[in-house]
Amino acid sequence: MYRNKKTGIIGIIITVIILILIVIFSNGENNSNFFENAATNLVMPIQNGLTYLKNKISGNSTFFTDINNLQNENEELRQKNSELEQSLRELENIRTENETLKEYLNLTEKYGEYKTIPGYVINKDISNYSKTIVINIGSDDGVQENMTVIGDEGLVGHVVSVTNNTAKVQTIVDTASSISCSMSTTKDSIVCKGTLNGQSELRAMYIPTDANIIQGDSIETSGLGGIYPKGIHVGTVKSVTNTQNITDRYALVETAVDFDKLDTVLVITNQ
View 1 (cartoon, helix red, strand yellow):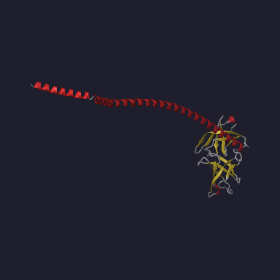
View 2 (view 1 turned 60 degrees about the vertical axis):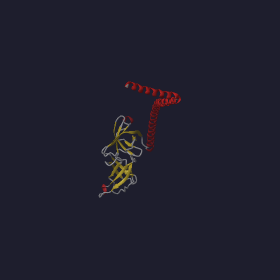
View 3 (view 1 turned 135 degrees about the vertical axis):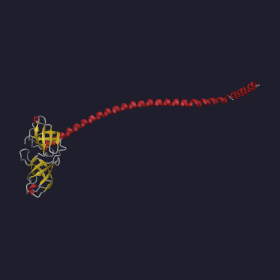
View 4 (view 1 turned 120 degrees about the vertical axis):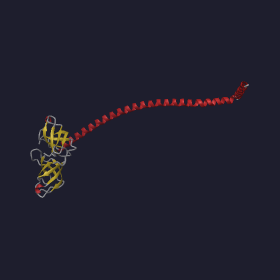
């Protein structure tokens, strides 16, 4: 009896399923739309994903192409920049040479009464006690010891030693330097010595007691002493210090030559 009851329930379930299928197939058009919508909802995200991936890959390809183009352009720009830098260096060398030649011309015109040899500074030894320079001309060019060296603005110093191609010059601001000078206005004789205070300063000493030395006076070589010829500009008085003993008074002289910027010189050979 139990088995008959169970069989009856199964039969009822099968009957219900058959009825549901009949309803579904009897509404085939609506069912078709249902499955089509379901398929669309399932396929569209996949299709969109594939389309996005394709576009992404295509975009990356363009990106890498642009990278290569930029690298090539950058290399061309570097090459052009290198060529421009080389041209600028050449122009700078030409400009420097022209300026040097112009300075030489100005010097030879300014000191036309002297026979001179042009040169330029290749080394500087500037310390508290020693202030010397080395120039690029020597005995092969006719340079000898004790020859006077001048710059565009005035006196530089004198040659203390020579090699075949170079010469060492003791500048007037060296502490061992001593120059016999005169004041351009009164013609009174004084002695100017190098100091420890600066690279463009001299100390004027042995000023005559009756000499009227004031700030702004021009100082030039007197021609005494056997080294420097007469009349070469040395510098300008920038201060006068009076002492209790008038014989000890002194003045500070600012040199005409700026030794920090000194590049070109003339060596006087016929003094």
